[in-house]
Image 1 (cartoon, rainbow, N blue to C red):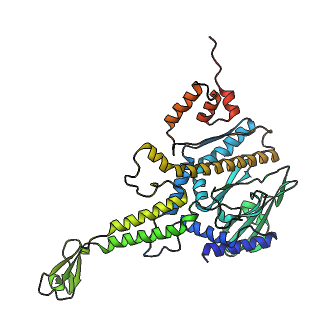
Image 2: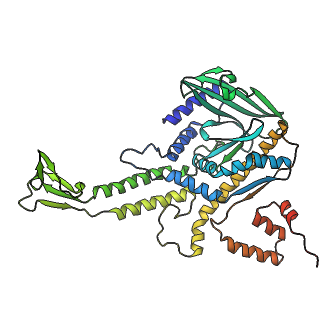
Image 3: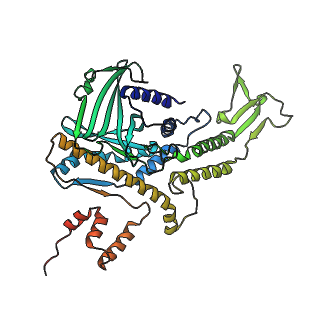
Length: 450
């Protein structure tokens, strides 16, 4: 059992004991979460002094996040409340969205949790190791959960449990604080006022009329093969962990081939000078010379060690492993591997990109759903705390589709369809500017009078 898994298990046991409720996190998921986190931080359990990392996990998470959020723009509009949400907190979230998406890709998901900070809307990004589901609805969506925040004060560790429960009358949020001496478990209950940062938090608040959770869970689109009954998402490289291990081993063999094949000169000790009892190597690169206390058979005093490198075979084997990793992670071949001259034409490149396009599109759909839920949470908080009068909140999303599509070519095709009346002008505007149907119709220019 890894340190992450052991610590996570003790923490969950403390949470369950404190709340009197069961956390929906199986042992298989705890183990998997620990492994995904280790891989992302380049601390895989198989990495030793002789086994080096190719950094495949963080590279894949970063690449998918980059493609999914490249030139991503999103706004909230439609009312004074929408303007407040957009300017006060939403655009800050969009600014951080690539980083959030990368971590979600790595560990299966990320929670956006809105809160009020000095009468201003704010959002917290909660990672997988501090988010524990408690209940789900009929669709398997998390509707109740507990969040864990821990602060170190001197030699004491303070833990806060923030429980969100969706009930008939609304959402109830409860805060509990604990103090312990170590990073595992919770310790004894204490008042929230024991920690300055938590002193102003209410022990319990009910947001009446809420029919959905305040928090928003950004879940990766892959099916959960670790625990099909779990409501949690899985890492985008969850199906390739064994191949990643093989790739790291193959990469290490390649490095050893270069190390073992380093040019060297075996020299008899008779060929080397002694200076004050110590052997003196020639002034050239000292790594070239290896002194041997052997009889050279009456021949030359020097013998060159220059074996033929087998790096070609190792590189081919490594490349095949990386291609298989790409396939299992849903990214196009050639993203990490070397395809040499396999794809040359634009059509061939588009075919290779199709796998990445499908994966990225699914991530973008999940992201849109999560952001809509987040704005709904902001909307509820604005009502509860009377921040602004109620108003419509319309979201727009604009993604860069150049992962697989030639934007200029697609623009010409859409423009031709609009000019021939096959699609409406508002449809063309909605596609190009990322506006909703209502916004596109409203923003169409008024025809000039002749």
